[in-house]
Length: 290
Length: 331
Image 1 (cartoon, chains in turn green, purple):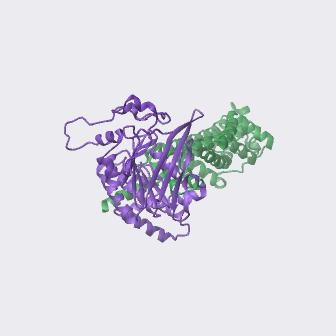
Image 2 (cartoon, chains in turn blue, green):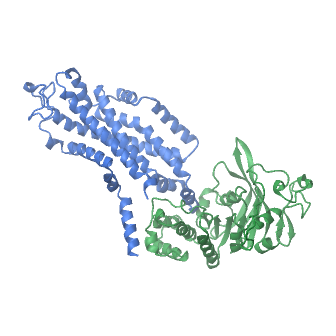
């Protein structure tokens, strides 16, 4: 009896604790630490940075990394380290808000189009296919061109661009869950379609949805960097890794640190999110969870 | 009407390449209160769709094309299940007519505890029942189905329990609202033989305790012998023989029933090859206009092709559809 209790208790802990499983996997740990670093930088930006992001040191232009300016200075004499730290804030906020927009709308559309067949599904998926047909950067730029450049519009644009991926992922898992016996069983108990959707189908399709969300975060951050690089994202003097890269183009040979550090942080962030997404997929896969 | 359920002329069709295809043809069935009706037949002969049509659970593109099913509902009085609107139907599903499915391992949602799923069945029919009363009711039905360590089971997830336990829980969920009719769609097929025996015994006890009627669908005549009073044998979308269980086993009238009974393996016939009826069930939708068992029947004659035999009373309360017993042809 006590043995049984102990075993079931242990299993329950392992099963319920996704974080524990994630950190046990070396890749998951690496991704988690990378993201933790960026998040900490973003949260504690005012305490970590040495200078104000817009502060111009006209005497210290294009300085190589040294003890005062850890990552060097740019062509205006602004501290690159401080701009990177504040840039993490911009990247994360844009990533999180735009993915929330995309995930929220995409989840609802995916559930509806997956559960109800016929005209509703066809209509939703047709709109999604049209959105999908555009190269994502082009579509985002188009939306920003219409709405105007600002941080809010950038988030909206990236959000809209990412809706189809979520709709498709959620729709696919809803379709497979819908045909399982427990859904038919729920119906035979007397549940309404709406209740079956909310109580059984939605929670069961969360796993693939969460994985998709972490992967979408990295692509959203990358899209923001690209848009800023092209001058249609975050407006200067607001620091963004993409616009920092853009400004560095003319000084690449003279001051390579202007390119290296923003690029390094973009790579670190994207890589961490992707690794974390992969590890999460392994952990949340119901087939491996026994 | 003394019967709890009377199914009349039930026909079910489906769409195949945009053409209507008949799957079930003029099925008539009656279930008396407290009675267990067994439905036997090979896969694809229309047993499960008959049951699903009663709760309007036919998957698209299947639909009922005609017929009615009068059910003496404890709350609504006499209703026709096949023409009931969705709202009233939900009041009957799980409360007055409950179903048990074939696959206990997948019939419960893997991400919720047993307790939550049992309470779900209660919540929809008793929205104002207090939590502790719901819990008590769960404990009570789990006791009825002989689940040991009830509190621990309630807190478990489906993957932590065995198939036999899960099927007991499925039965408990079906019983939680004390239904008047229990439809068991091959409830023992996925279980091993010892567990099968326990589940059958359990269902027999429950039938007596709760005085519920049972519709027992199976392809195993041995199971029917243990559970049912009345038996209907399905073949290729219609009933070929109907009688009381005793009558059917001692005096089978239809060659198909005969074959089914012969294929039950017996401990006394050691060393002999197991009997099987030659051939296969014709695929659904290819309903012939003459005796549908013709191709597999050992008594088949050319004259059997003259039409579809009618279901006639060959002995008191014993119906059979075969030209060897009656020359009547279905119109």
